[in-house]
Image (cartoon, rainbow, N blue to C red; front, side, top):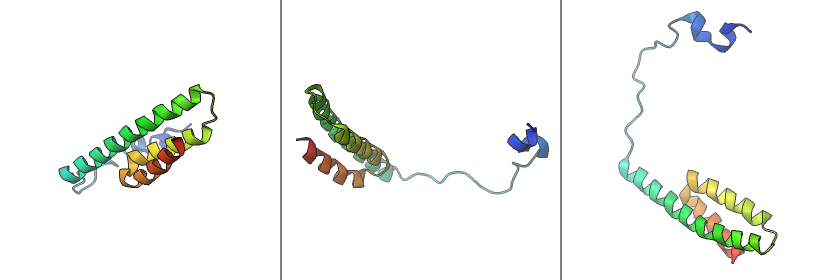
Length: 96
């Protein structure tokens, strides 16, 4: 293959030298702390549910749907812990 197709800067040289200020804005520490606290809380609740699902698995119950919902709730917890609360509540009701 041609180097220009995969590494265009090798051919053009100074293509990445642009004028301007491109640093990231300063993060809001309170907002970040609250987000992190929400993620930790959601993951703690999911850990309890995970133990219950594993107990049902060891008894031989079919838990494929529960495991899939658990994974969806875990993904939501990392991205938006506020909305993950609803998914976790639903899942907790199904696992009892």
